[in-house]
Image (spheres, rainbow, N blue to C red):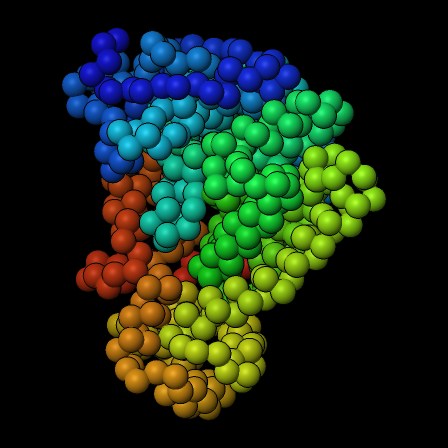
Amino acid sequence: MKNTINWNFDNSYSRLSNAFKEHIEPVPVKKPELVLMNQDLANELNLDFSKIDKNELSALFTGNILPKESNTIAQAYAGHQFGHFTMLGDGRAVLIGEHLTNNNKRYDIQFKGSGKTAFSRNGDGRAALGPMLREYIISEAMHNLNIPSTRSLAVAKTGEEIIRDTSLQGAILTRVASSHIRVGTFQYIAARDKKDELEILLDYVVKRHYPDLINLKNKALELLKTVINRQIDLVVNWMRVGFIHGVMNTDNMTISGETIDYGPCAFMDTYDPKTVFSSIDQKGRYAYCNQPIITKWNLSRFAECLIPLIDKNQDNAIKIATEAINSFEKKYEEKWINMMRDKLGLFGLENEDKFLILDLLTWMHQKKADYTNTFCHLMDLTKKKNKLFDDINFMNWKKRWKERSLKNNDSPKKSLALMKHNNPLVIPRNHKVEEALKAAEKNDFKLINKLMEILKDPYTQKDDILDYQIPSNLDEKYKTFCGT
Ligand code: AMP
Ligand code: MG
């Protein structure tokens, strides 16, 4: 294939020693068929697929033909899955290489669902169409909500059946990420107990993601602090839009601070802190309200990996790392409350803010109010009248909010602008996602394309979004599945 596409590979991870990965190619598929392609992302990556015909594109996005300069690997990693440590790795994914954009920004290009690797354990290395489309929809929605995320460049069907509870269509997602290095990558290398390998990983990560830290005295500690901040920012963003990741295992937490692995994730409609959608999360470990706590738990596992590099004296290293980890609550609380202030259009800091925010959340919980739409109502951007908001307690709360809004702020316009920037009008509602996936299973991609169009610009009021603002009626019984 001629390089009219403008691939510009520089595969730095594949140059690391074999402790970090296995060299393996995607397993060819029977009948490739490209079904979704993300033109906006292709443009951002300076990739041009316009001169390639559909058959060749289909072969490309299933790995049946590989770009000349790719160097395909499966990455090794470990992870705490629901609290239990396991050696994992890319069991159904292959990194085809790192593409550099015209501005020298580096992106992993990865196929998910590309066949067995050394890390497949008992799995078939494949992925089903529904979950790959789901990841495409939600990851792009997250990106458009201004939340750091891996991206989705394409989905192609393999023409093969895969066996789960039933027989399903196979598919491959092309995932794009600033890297796929996870907390679990550090756990894998730390478990091998070779300090030189750990040093190599630290240097690699700092150079690739946080070059500002290169010359600092204690790089390991600085990296820990930086990742703590990134992850706090990320989880605060999730809380802002009501996103529930669903499977926050340490192998699903990136060092870059991007949301990764859209398995059983979903957005909350009715406000309930205990909301959990994942069918396998029976104890609610990864429920909405637990996400910050689990983030801290995962960061503690990351800190443990770095101990040998933080200080030669282990006791000292533990003390320093613990201090860093213990800064989590205060930082989180501060960022969370500021995020909620933004959602309410409040400037400045007032002691009463925390109570104002908590009282609203309590009211929403008691009245089973829709999380997203309550903020739309406060922005006066709901076309449909909802009697719920005539409730006397809500009216009283609103009075307090209005009074508070007048402090530190000379312009209601500025308040509204702040709110509009932080409160999405549309999110991927569960029933809308399901409806689109159902049609796509039958080869009708109209609903997915429409949904993607709506989710492209979630903060702007438009005529055709009304249907996408209605809360899902699946709420109480809705369950999501992972790894399918
Ligand atoms: P996930 O739930 O997608 O985060 O995956 C957890 C681990 O299971 C990772 O190591 C995956 O590579 C592996 N895995 C998930 N599905 C499969 C599959 N169908 N075949 C092989 N490995 C898989
Ligand atoms: Mg994963």
